[in-house]
View 1 (tube, rainbow, N blue to C red):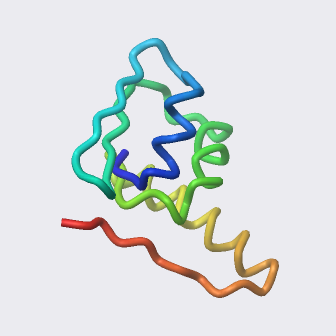
View 2: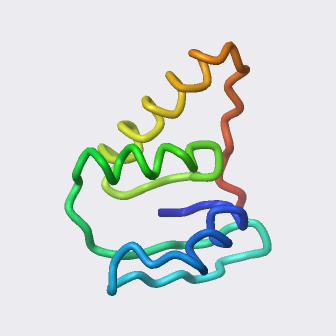
Length: 87
């Protein structure tokens, strides 16, 4: 999972899985790695970071998370802000 410093800050304090590893790639990008089943509750949890996630592998997971996040914003009448990976 490639994401923002805000996402990284959360995962510095929370361990979802013992295999979790957080790496700073640049001032604005972090890589969060771990092995975990693609369960619905995990997808919902990660949707809370939708705007702070730049990309996820597998891409199937990224699209499921982004779909939930987008629907949540729309249900509150909020504008959708797409966060792009920074090179």
